Image 1 (cartoon, rainbow, N blue to C red):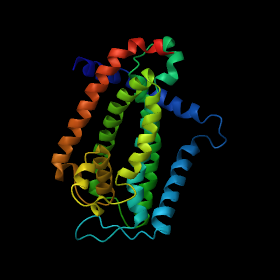
Image 2 (image 1 turned 45 degrees about the vertical axis):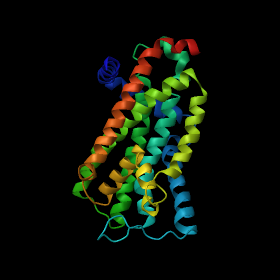
Image 3 (image 1 turned 90 degrees about the horizontal axis):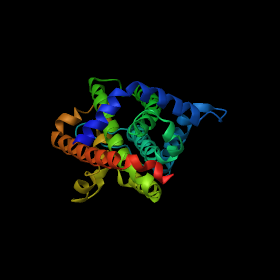
Image 4 (image 1 turned 90 degrees about the vertical axis):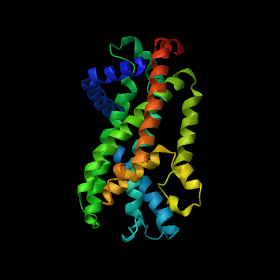
Length: 273
């Protein structure tokens, strides 16, 4: 618990620095490209169009039933509502896992806690996510799904996503520094997770007990929360309070594990250079 409290204090005390470093990270990564940071939007938009073309057009995917008594929604809207969160989750997890070992040479010059590193990397992806979310909201309004009161819960689900990502990144960035293969394994696992999460298909097509098993994936909670907000369905985190308790319980466990690992090994990170 002491490690967790220590990590939280470090994030609060260096929040301004995290925001500055995240903007620098975003700019420096795209400095050599002619289109600059525009590629941060172009790449995910291309992915969305490809998945929509394959799963929506070629396979002639019908409209999606999302709630009893509500008209089915176009597949592209349903896909978009979940995929923008997946892009944020994937990029943040991958970049966060290698955030420390890729900066080992600069560790001796730093005058801020190492726990800040995964956080500002996630923050750099967060700006892109906000832009993607804004584009999605504009598209939804043009296609008949207007801004509604349930949009307020997006603030909650964005915060929940951030907490999950930071907890995971504390674990993976530490393990990846010690064992570099962890990053490669994580990359392969996340690619598989895309097809095991309800992003490209509905979980209702499966027979019990598979839906219950797959719902153990915390990403399902976040994706369904986003869709509930954007389609104006319900207050997902309240109506599914049992799932909310499970999600935060899992995040807390991951954060405690990540904090203990990070505080224990960060004094020795420079030895892995």
